[in-house]
Amino acid sequence: MSLAQPLLEQTRNKPALVPPCNHSTVTQAQEDCDLLSTSRGALRLGRLARVLFSDKTKLLCVNVRGRSWCWREPGQQPLCARAVKPSKKYAGGSILLWRCMSANWVGNLCRIFVIVTGSVYTEILERHMLPSTAWLLPRGCTDFILQQDDDPKHTSRRAQRWLEANHVATLAWPAKSPDLNPIEHLWAIVKQRVCEGPPLGYVKELWERLERTWWDIEHLCRQLVESMPARIEAVIEARGGYTRY
Image 1 (cartoon, rainbow, N blue to C red):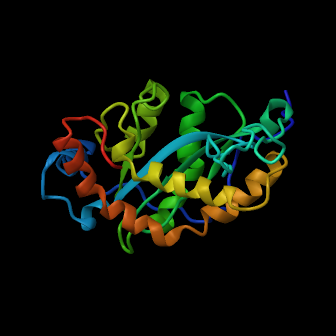
Image 2: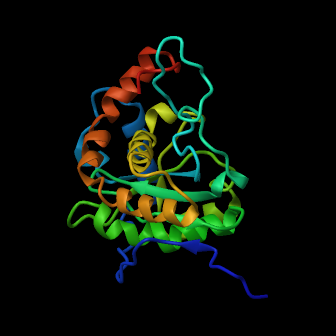
């Protein structure tokens, strides 16, 4: 059965893959992960530089940031042509994306055209995450730790077998914790910049502008990853509640 479009799409290809993790066992790497996520004052960028933060999201072509604001003079009618955005059928379309980042830069931006299953997720890791390590890791470093949430696709048997076969250690991650993931903050900045241009028409325009914005965000990555100690301290002080992040 032929498909009208590829299952996955990426913004760039790197010819060489980084060798697999050098840890003697994944268990030892996991101990490093636990130390990163639980020990106060023990976090250093030297260790954080080996962590790849990842997530997926869905963007609508209309109202990318999820909400809009409009200045209105006192006494002015709230509903007028200037203050109301025209609607589009199916909101102009949407894009489902997977992305990753490290302290060095952002990784491949993967556009997904199908329902994500365990097999699709392992394909994303194989075709997009692994090639990205060529420029996401510090020079001379070949071992890394993958941060992912507890989505059922990530914890599926197929995904777990792939991670074990490729010696990829994962970071222990609490459920529903966007405060701790710097890529959420990065993505908010990306969406804000995407909205700064002219109004978007359809998905193709959104994808092209998103690509340009994504690869021009390098200088913020290190700053966001360096904020991890403060993020963890804030969550601990809030006893797992909301923080300013």
